[in-house]
Image (tube, rainbow, N blue to C red; front, side, top):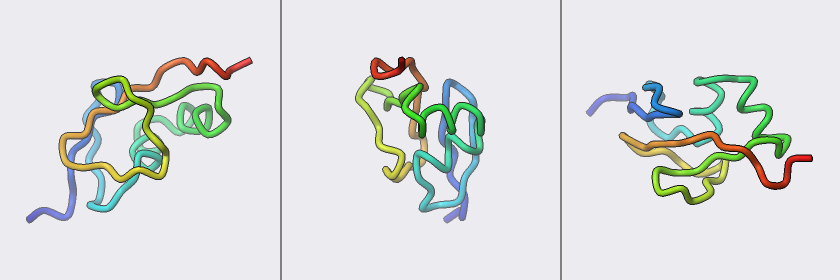
Amino acid sequence: MSDTIRVYVNAHAIDLPRGSTVQDALREWNADEAAAIARGERAVTDSRGLPASLEDGVAPGSILRVVGSRSAK
């Protein structure tokens, strides 16, 4: 078994260590977007369009999408 997994953020493949979180994936993909999500200016969803928590773990093949946040001012 590999020590890394591949996940996708906005269609970009990201290789991460097993046990990584949504936040880890976002930081690896784009640190500025990750910070915007942490501030509530953007949001992240799973492949079904359901909100994902930054603390959620990611599994091999996870698909995440960064979207506009309704709470952004």
